[in-house]
Length: 457
Image 1 (tube, rainbow, N blue to C red):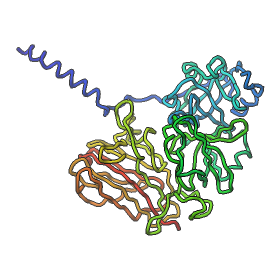
Image 2 (image 1 turned 60 degrees about the vertical axis):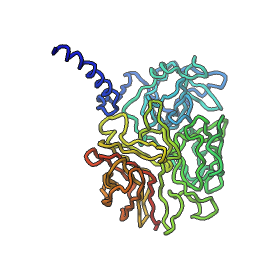
Image 3 (image 1 turned 120 degrees about the vertical axis):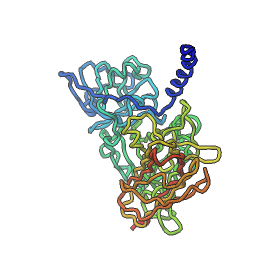
């Protein structure tokens, strides 16, 4: 009888194992940081030297690289958003260049911020739009087959976007002052506005959208956006703000390629010439009734959908649209090496997109990229609700590393928002975190409509 009993239990044990395996909350195995050591006889050259050495390449004839040359560079732009197609942009201290690859989703292996050593021998320099690019001599349109790409492009260290050198301009005309050094690098244009802000989307439903971006001096540059970009259907922002983008050049004309909607930020919502300080560019979005300026406001977009894996997107992924253009990370996720954060962006039939902090889980939503320098009377507000009986202080708030006191107040109605207001915040801080711990979050909490305001001195 004991044997029969054990046999009957076996299917139940196996079934429990299956469900356990499907749970995403598991400890990831340790990852090995990628590293690459150059061959002893390797010759490292710069982007500028590469261009000069193969300047004889033309649009009709590519030149195959036969020497043992290596390019040490950092990936400045990847294809995560869909706006960069079958290519990556790499740059070093001398300039940038396009590298062609016959593959989509390259960012999974080669993300922006990744340092790489490119083994150039066997690749080629071709020309398109009068600009050189790295590719493969036998590839379709010189695109490098992915297996060859991986054999030639070697990662060194973890990807770190903070190490990308971003050149800053408030005057578009200055881009040409060092054209060869600036082209195909990552730039930040400050104090600029879209001439059709609030009127059209970044792109049409087919083809490319070409939109004009102007500075305070009357100079204009084109912004090119593919209809395949995940922000193509996003309305151009109104007012003056900042744009980070790859500075491309085609037949002698400058153009910008935006990597992510998060690189478009700080627009003040004021039509140029209709109020506000001349020149604009101040981070923020309009004024409140008490005269305060909105430094940032995050609504988590108009809609969000589950990914192809059936899960809601983690706050750390670019599969949802930030309405503030700021950066979102989860230090808890990073510290534990998890592939997903326990804070995700989702919506319900009754509630618009918001952040869900899963019950009995550790998570942190860290927001950074805003600037409170020179502000007084800073005020942080947000909406919160719970999936069951709970208290609004179950989600802690850290202001630049200092824990704030969240008022003790029960969630009045399940899945109905109530507003939390935090004041007395120190100026000069540029990060705020919402923190869930397994011991205090026993209900599951939703946060939406985060807004930071202050008065500029």
